[in-house]
Image (cartoon, rainbow, N blue to C red; front, top):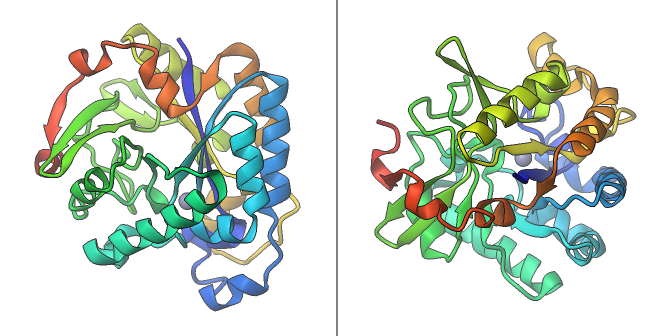
Length: 292
Ligand SMILES: [Zn+2]
């Protein structure tokens, strides 16, 4: 079983935890660090013959088109992470459509094709923003990976499935590929990437992968270029946000290497397509019934 690996290509100052520390107006003046960090990830993936889906912010793609081109040339999948990392509740349905269109046109200008996989800023498809699903299906997206099946103060739909499923909307059908979780003592733990990958032992993530394999599904692991950039400028974020952002940054790459040595990883599209009957065995939800 090949699992899915995904990289959300954004820079350290664009993370939601940074919103009070670095104003949006300052973004254009800050040096891009995610280009080198993403290239570091490309090298590691090439060494292990692994593929991944790279969800690009349009804002980054506009400033580093050669990076997008190189990622695509290396055989990875290019997805959209929206234009400038605004949560969907802030964009609203019309703002979201505009944001998608803008990012699509930037990515199409570089790679020649429009993205068909999407991940929202900070997992912001929640019970309050389910309207995003018909918008995505209507624009021709095939796969979304924005619904976190746990409840977190800032995101998540606890009732959502932890394995891939189909969502029907009035404008078409989407596959939803949730990030990896682990079921322990009847509760679901987020283990699939980001701060969870940096904080917990890698065995916990692997236990999640094994649980998925046993159930016949690929898992979806995620990380960000800023998580392999321990030299990034440090901000005062307060205890909780600072901990979430900075814990174990120096351990992300070694942990990723362990994962890549022990498991096979590919793009979200290929991970789903490896079981041709997946659409027959997966659960189907109506877009507005997802939050239960
Ligand atoms: Zn992001």
